[in-house]
Every structure is written in C-alpha cells, then in structure tokens.
Image (tube, rainbow, N blue to C red; front, side, top):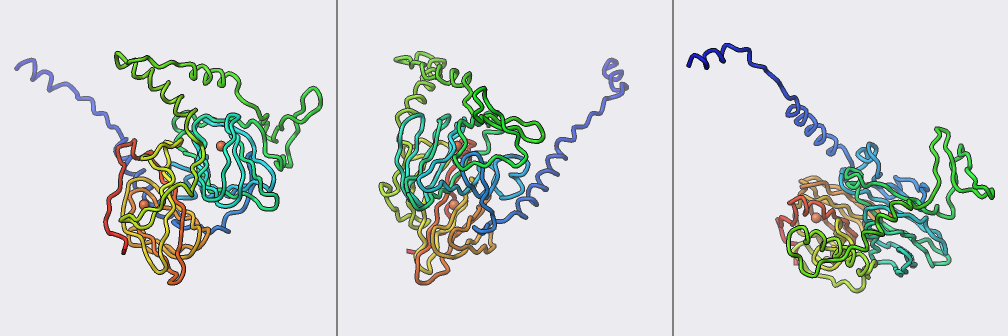
Length: 369
Ligand SMILES: [Fe+2]
Ligand SMILES: [Fe+2]
C-alpha cells in the first residue's frame, strides 16, 4: 500500500498521439475531394498528347500527386491510346500488369518475342513483367485502345518502367539536348533540368527475373516453406502458358440480374490478369440495368448510345465515347435515354478489393426483364 501510494505521487507522463485526429481530418478532406471530382468526363475534354509509348488521352494520370486531381479513382489509371496505321507503339516493360480493350483496329502484340493477334472487341492483356509492343496492321486507320495500369504498384515499391524503345513518331522535347553514342547515333536526350533519358532494358534486373524462371517446384510439398517454392514455379507456368488475348467473340453474353453482360476478364475463368475485371454491358432501347453496390472501383467507356447513371441518388448524363467513373462503395444504375437504340459500354473494375477482403456485389434491384 505504502509503495502504491508513493507511486501515485509521481508525475505521470502525458503523451498524446495526434494520429487519430489527423486521420479524421484526412478522411473528411478525402470525402470532400472525391465528391468534387467528375463522374463523367467528355471525350473531347482531354487533348491527345504523346508519351513514350504512343498518342494518348489521360482520363486519369498515373503519377502522384496529379493523379488524385483528375478522377475519383485510386487503384488504376485510365487512358485512351492510338497507334498509327501500319505502325507500332514504343516497347517497354514494367513489373505490373496492364489491360487494353481494343476499341478500333486490327493488329498484334509482341510479348517477350511471342506474337498475339488482336482485333476490335478483344481484350489484350499484358501480364506482369513482360516486354510488350503493339503493332497496328490497318493501313489507313489508327488502332484505338482503352487501357489501364494499376497505380497501386507505385506504393508497393515496384512502379519502375524500363522504356526499351520510343514509338517511331516520338518527338523530343524542344529544349532537349540529344545524347549520342560513339558512332554519332541519337540514343537519348537530356532535359533542361539535367534529367537524362536513355531508353534500354535493365540488364541486372533481367538476370534476377530470369533466375526466378529456373525455380523448380518440389514434387510434393512437405512443409509450408515448400508451398512457397511451389507457388513461384506455379506462377512461372501460369505466366508462360496463358494466352494474352481474350477474344471478344469467344465470350458469351449472359442474362444476369444486373442486365445483359459479357464478361471478358473475371476471377472465374483463366486469365493473365490478376487485378482487373472487364465486361461489356448492353442496355436495351429505353431500358436500364439493375441496381447494385460494391466496394471496388469501376470505370466505363461508352461504346454506343446515350443515357445516364444514377449514382447514390444523383443523375450523371453520358454520351458515346464518354468516360464514367464509379467510386468505391457507390450504389449505381445505368439507364438508356434512347427509346430506339441500345446503349453499350465497356467496364474495367479493380479486383484488388477482393484481395483486401472486400469482394463481391451487393445486389439491390433486378434489371427489368
Ligand atoms: Fe505498358
Ligand atoms: Fe458495378
């Protein structure tokens, strides 16, 4: 007792963590920020610009902090890309996967020296850590893609991209100082602020990745460690064996409670992609989808028709080629405003939330039959 009484007389250190308050403040500012961002972006509101790969429109950008200023979407970028008639994109590689929906045109990919043909209506998939380049075989029209890369890889420390070749129409910045090799060939450039850009693969990293391909699976895993060894061997087999183009015409239309949907990429069929789902939806003339909600983010590009979304009770009008964003945890429904023609859209949805423990749909209302 005496000892306890003595302890009570000591000055208690009072230490505050402000983290709780800071998090509350941040959460509210995030809610306000997302609420102020557009749900529908008009096709012509974004200019075509060149990047190292091709000509693109940035519906969202990939790099922070600018990315968070454009669209209410956290986990993936969204761009439109053009490849010139009879021409090709740049050639590059990144740790993360990428998804391309072919809106127009015909052509093929070269992925790690393997050719994969594609045409409008297909999904062209770039699996993780794969050298890729797009070739447009149309002689008089451009190939046009809706495409996306996951932004989360930047936060995971594996956001690096190796630009191996620039696309043939690439124009060096006006203030660029050209860098030449001993023979006098241009091999890159230096910008005014001293940033040097010389395309090429990272040979050391290539060696690291090649050594992973040599991993052999234990015949029968005898312990948990063996299971990890098997996992890498299984992933290598999956990466090498899976087709990289999903043919739109091979995927069936399904009459679902959300409406008429064709799933191109989902967790329920073999796929080279792990963090995206992709589908096409058709709304009948004057018709509407069901109503649902999911934690995961979703973005659409309107392929044909005009109409509107109801998102959390608010109306957002869209037209052909527009881009529609559906932020996390939003109740949504799609309605066709044309009484004579169907409306269609292609959707990319983030599958990451499934791995975070927030997968699946909460179905609220059936689409009319
Ligand atoms: Fe890429
Ligand atoms: Fe949805």
